Length: 286
Image 1: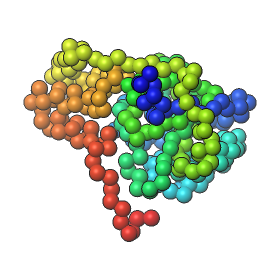
Image 2 (image 1 turned 90 degrees about the vertical axis):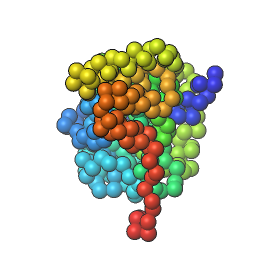
Image 3 (image 1 turned 30 degrees about the vertical axis):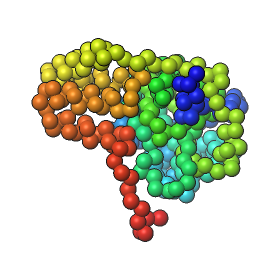
């Protein structure tokens, strides 16, 4: 099926991980303070928090991803099983972190790596430590549950989002690394064979009009966040062209004559989907 062929260029299951090792890593992750650092607030509904395991500063609360020669943070130094697992892959990390996604939480549709100026290939890997069937990655018009017990790959330059609908918390280790021989060897058997994939339906014009009318009513009553979230969540329900949910929010405020909010959401779409030109590399940049 063409849809699955396209999807396999965006996400894949790499291989099973040793259950005993995963249990040790999971136990270590549970000792991490629950008041994790909050970054990328504009990308989420709330409930997404992280602490870094690899970065260039060694500070676990430094969670903004950038190209770097990564080193272990003071948090990873206290997690021997996790340290050993990450080292065993032989990857060249630019960042790695523990990420918690709480119940009824969403990472809104977005693309990543736009801010990176290094010309090397960048890749993202996931190790689910705690998850549930209501957790899903949405990319390529499909919902994929990254199941516990495996190592997963994601190419985040495609529009994607994540959700945890009912809980309990989703806890992942997320690793950003550079493409090299070690990465190619690790991901050689990657694919979606045997992975349950839910292909999302395309919405009808009537359905989108009804959702837009509801958002206009809510925003008109002053419930702006409720209106916005009702449209942003459509990304997890329907297969639509990139940025459709942001266009719907812009249309909501245009219908209400609120040009300031309409322009703000048009600008936010550019940021979330990396439509603005990337920063220019200068001689002063490393």
